[in-house]
Length: 326
Image 1: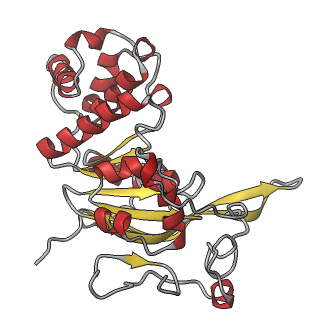
Image 2: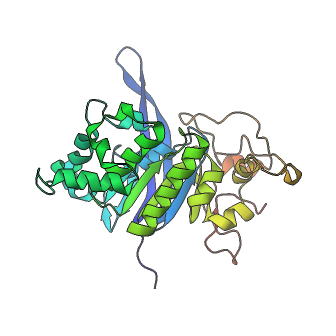
Image 3: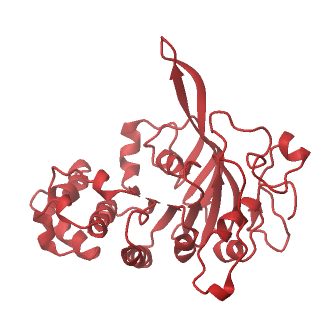
C-alpha cells in the first residue's frame, strides 16, 4: 500500500485584489492560482513548468505560506497549513523551506555569511551560540564552500556561490521538502549544471523532496520524477517525466516541448507556434483557459472548463485537462 503524500494541495486558490479609484477599493481580482491540486511524495521531485506569469512562483510561495491562500488545502505531513497562525506554523517551517530565484535579493547584504546561516538556529533555538560556528562550517562544506566563507558578505560571491549559500540556508533546519523557485534561471549554463548536480546529490544523501519550479523544460527533465504543467493559474497536465516528454497529451505542453533547443540539427522537431497572447488572469476566458490560443479549440472548449482526467487506461499516472484525445 503506497504511503501518504508528504505534500497534498487541494483546490488551492490565490487571488490578489486589484484596487483603484478615489477610495482605493477592490475593483477586480487577479486569479494567480485558480483551483490547483497536486501531490508530492517523500524523496520525490515534482517539476512545475509553464510560461512566465502562469502562477508557478505564487503557488510555491503559497505552499510555504509566504502568501495566505484565498481558499483550498495545503496538507503537509498530514497537517493543513492554511488555517494555521504564524505561531502554529513556526515548528513546521523547520521541515518546509524555499530556495529563491535571485540569491542576491534573498540574502541580506548587511549580514555576513556566518550571521545568515546561524539565524535559523537562533530563531528555532537550536544549539548554543558557541556551537553555531561549527554548524555553519558544516553547512558550507555540504554545499561545496570553504569554512572561511563564513567571514565574508553575500556581495563578495559569484551568482553560483550565492545560490549555494541560499541552498545552505534552506538545509540548516534539516527540512523534508524544499521549494526550488527557478533556482538556476539566473545563472550561466555551466554553473546551472553544478547547482543541479548539487541538488541531486543532496536529495540522495538526505532524502529530500523538491518542488522544482522552472520555465526551462530541458532543466526540469534532468531533475524531475514527475512533471506538472501550469497555464494561467491551472494545472493542465501531469505525468511521469519520461512519459510526458515522450507523449505529451495537452496542446500547450506540446508547444512548450517543441521550443526545447535541439543539439543535433538533423533531428529538428516541428516547432509549434502559439497564436495570440496569454490572457489576463484578471479577466480569464470562459471554458478552457487555453482555448483562445489552442489550434484544436471547438465550441465546447469556449463554454465548458475541462477537468484533469486520465487519457488512457494504460497510463494511470498521466492526467490532462482537455476535452479531447489529441
